[in-house]
Image (cartoon, rainbow, N blue to C red; front, side, top):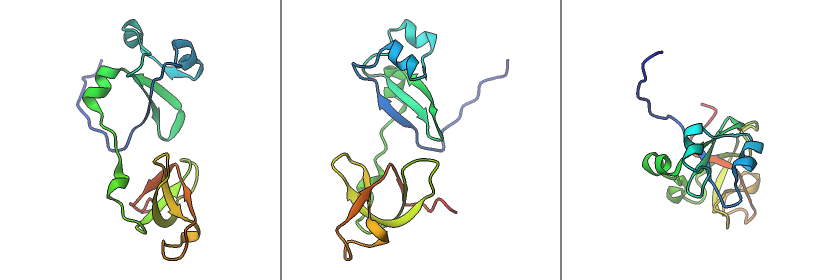
Length: 139
């Protein structure tokens, strides 16, 4: 067997919390991988997280609460963004990025962009998106 090395991540990880409605059977049906070590300690349980591959949403696995709390913090980049900042948005990893102007967050804390690439001075209409970035993804 090869030797383990230390690595750090270069990307954002997508997670959702385990809820009371999540059972071992329901997560297996959803094709979430649960290690035997986590299952032996009672997972899935509230406090655990379900992580998914951002490029393949069918690739999901459980992260135990203790490991999650020690190794992850939530990313919330939008609190530093200004209205009308240039952003790129899309709803899935398969879609092309659309350039526009940041319009704040909706009531679900999803990022919004003004419609038709207009600014706040030109329109009040805005749409929410699953993904948003201020870094040009085409470069």
